[in-house]
Image (cartoon, rainbow, N blue to C red; front, side):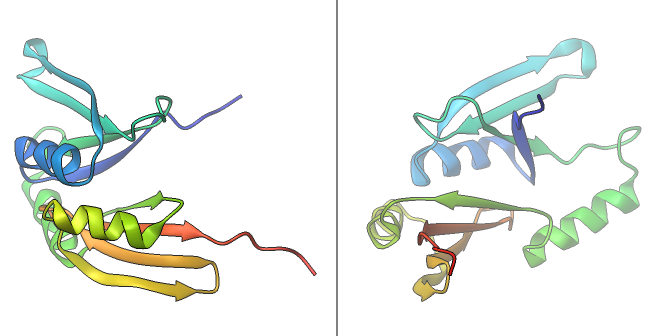
Length: 142
């Protein structure tokens, strides 16, 4: 059986991303390991409390030889536009989560709105990544 272990978001600054995802979004640190043998590569993951089997990797944009400078530049451009990756978060009360996160300093790009699939809103992290927060509606088939 194959399962999802983690998803990855590119970030400009791992410390800034860690602060955002833990203090403002409410996630917890899953791992924060620096590997000296790999040029001080930092493996940093966060996840939702109570959902221990899935993590979000906050990955610094690497330089050569992993990624050439032109590719890194293209990734940064996509991040600035909000198109380098998206994480979809679910909650049982979108409006309450929106207010709580706004109170912790999250700046939303879209307020909660009724959609055919539930209540949904959007925000971006300090690196420009797009995140959606959704209260899914149970859809019954006809």
